[in-house]
Length: 327
Picture (tube, rainbow, N blue to C red):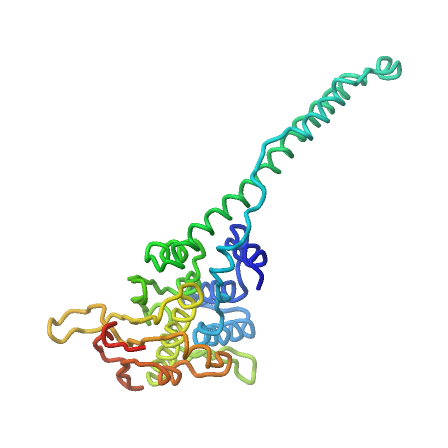
């Protein structure tokens, strides 16, 4: 995409807009929270459809991703015109006001006062138009300056620049819609992400279906199905995190450590422990078809650690150390 197109797509205005995937995640997560609390569901067909959509969303976080960012092109983008204040519209409206001469008809029917007010209102409106035009130009110029600063630091592989780029574009906000949170550690050549996932707040422990007679059937989800769904969701989030980081930052690889609350048998306490650790290089990502792959099976393409059973779920693993990666 062109740099101007990039600025339009990822500028301040569009950063507040939602991609379709963001909307689906927010709506699906909201539905799940409400439905889990509901004692009675009136629209059976809609409830089952939303439930199935939520399950699909959980397993497809990896499918959506930002476009690759060409920081060299952004760095070479010429500046827009510098913002200059002027009162062109206000001056024209003021001249019309000053030139107004009430007619005989205006005097006879007392219309002069209303017309003067109309022209004065027009002056205020014109003043606002001038200010709006200036602010628009200022926003474009300031955004260009910000992008130049970020580009310079990213291309120089300065970790603080990486952080600023991610803070500016917020590419990982989607995942937070599903209750996960992230902590990042950045170096010049790799990024380590701790991804905290909560199965009890995200994965439903029930199955909704509609019977042949149109009634709602709600059954407990078998533990094996629950664990498999949880595994797919965590792996899908890991892939999404890797894709987003590598779309924005020119690093050699991303290590994603998915963490969950597990019993630490050494302390007898429930603690956040690593359940999957994966090292994701860009060279492997470009070879994958994210629309058709299975997120759990996909981790076989990467250096990773995972101990999982359909019956018992995840067992804690040691995180992958960046020093052990030779890419």
